[in-house]
Length: 358
Image (cartoon, rainbow, N blue to C red; front, side):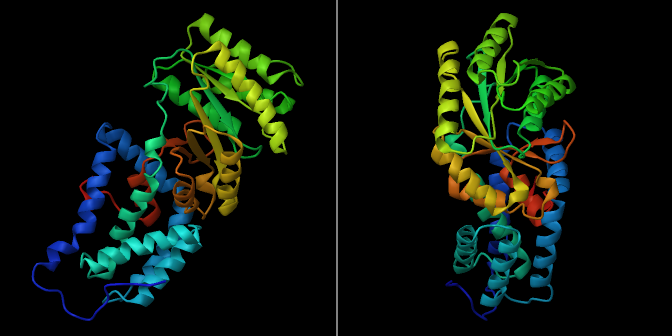
């Protein structure tokens, strides 16, 4: 890896101001991404992210602390250690190369002269990568006028898919949206029972058939129920145990056809649920689903609180360019936070929003 901009020259007059440029640019990105939010929800998100990313941050911050402790200037060795620290946090190698290259660019422009400011340059690079999928973001249920709005949720068993659906439903109810849950994973009796229990906890209706029934038929009934009851949206839980591309595509294609026939433009969003504890295996899983399914509009990463591999979020954003919408930060029904690139970068690096004007 090639590094640029190193030297032993003392900063010239005026470079002290330039040194804070990385902080200012990161601050601008943060403000532009949160203009529509009030301070209270934003700070709550930051606190939940900080808690959820504790294991990753503890590991990464310890590494960064050792790197910067006592360092008086930025050297190739320092950035090599930064690279290793990011990889240990499960940020992919190619993604780490991009981050370090961006930091090197800041060095070439003499925007960095002190080691402790490197964190803010890393944050700027992270925010840029984490925001890369925003152009592909589909209109949410709040932004779309179509009713009922149909959300198709996919992912393999064990990722926390059913629990996440309940968390989403609870979140929408709190925002004044009326959802109906559809138990289209008819292969497992436990899946139907689990969704029913979580639906009760979230305070929403669940449409279900008997085990072994047609998933498409359940979706048909769910959309019909939403229309007759005046519900705003339908959230469809799909099977997660189909092991071959052929079976998965055939079943989901049928579900999509039924949804499209009964609701204009449906499904209006397709969410992929991924388990963050899988680390780089979650990246492989996401790539596989992206190849199999056209039209994945968003990703929800679960169990972020149970892993020191939170850096995988950065790799997923970088390699797939699919917007990350939510993070699961615990087992409670309210443990779901909207993904905010700047807040995530702060939580990952152990930065406070205050110096950034947040």
